Length: 312
Ligand SMILES: Nc1nc2c(ncn2[C@@H]2O[C@H](COP(=O)(O)OP(=O)(O)OP(=O)(O)O)[C@@H](O)[C@H]2O)c(=O)[nH]1
Ligand SMILES: C[S@@+](CC[C@H](N)C(=O)[O-])C[C@H]1O[C@@H](n2cnc3c(N)ncnc32)[C@H](O)[C@@H]1O
Ligand code: SF4
Ligand code: SF4
Image (cartoon, rainbow, N blue to C red; front, side, top):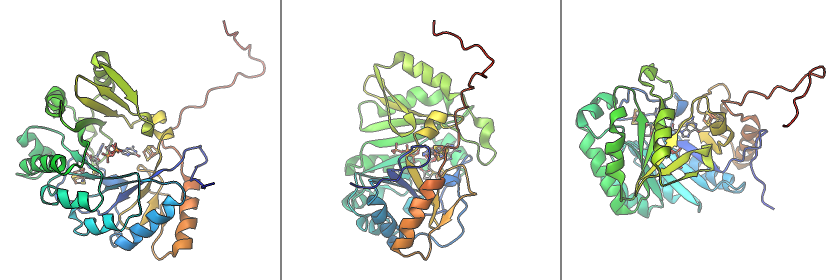
């Protein structure tokens, strides 16, 4: 029987989330950069292919590429071609560099893309990304991804107080009836941007109240709401022990280290220079030190002297 990678909290790792670079052509005001500041040389095609091949022996069947901006890697097509067969290969990108490469990426084996789009207003887009004139390139990227069949295309919208809270309906209208999904994401506290944190629970309640249907994903127990031809997923990572208890991803940094959690940098495991046997050992070791970042408070057990309340 195939061995699997299960940590001490019973969480099975089925997916690798790989950062391909720290570099980016945008400078979003809130960017967490996948929680890393990797300074070593960038992970190579060979390093990626070897690690993924070994991980598949343990039942890992999904890979997500992120960054920095992964499309700054001109060898992304080579990376895709070097991978073993997998159930799901996806990319999270800012979309600005996607249009000319979408078809080639699909041909090289990419299944789907997530594209960050916080706003439909180009002025607001410039403000969030601290760059000028990139909005129309993202729109081109979205259209090219649909045409190339990199679907469903998920649009990642970080929910920002005073910036884009008023755009939920506009975004829902934009995706309705198209192979697009909207992911509304709670802002995590990076780069001092928490002043823009907005209450996503209130938004989620209002979506739930008007949804035709909803479904809970296994990963992070995220809920998807179906609203008359529009699919909206809510990503609520903060103080959410259920989210962390259903975290099935192991992260790989852009300088080839295993990273057990987005929010920690004190337990990275370096892989550089290891042979296949070393990689396999490091993989198993790292799964062993994984722990949920947000844990549920333990349920207090009654002391012996305390009277236990009856069920009814
Ligand atoms: N805290 C936390 N946030 C995560 C984790 N994985 C993804 N996110 C956040 O979820 C949001 C969406 O991330 P994406 O890269 O689009 O990927 P995804 O939605 O997680 O994955 P798919 O839905 O399978 O495509 C981003 O804001 C990520 O930072 C995680 O393990 N922990
Ligand atoms: C770090 S980016 C890397 C990939 C690519 N450059 C992009 O922007 O899609 C991955 C995702 O994390 C999201 N993200 C970045 N900083 C975040 C934060 N502080 N809180 C929540 N999500 C964040 C981005 O919106 C994006 O969808
Ligand atoms: S495009 Fe992605 S990596 Fe670049 S700054 Fe924005 S969120 Fe961060
Ligand atoms: S344990 Fe929680 S915070 Fe850490 S990577 Fe997993 S879901 Fe994210």
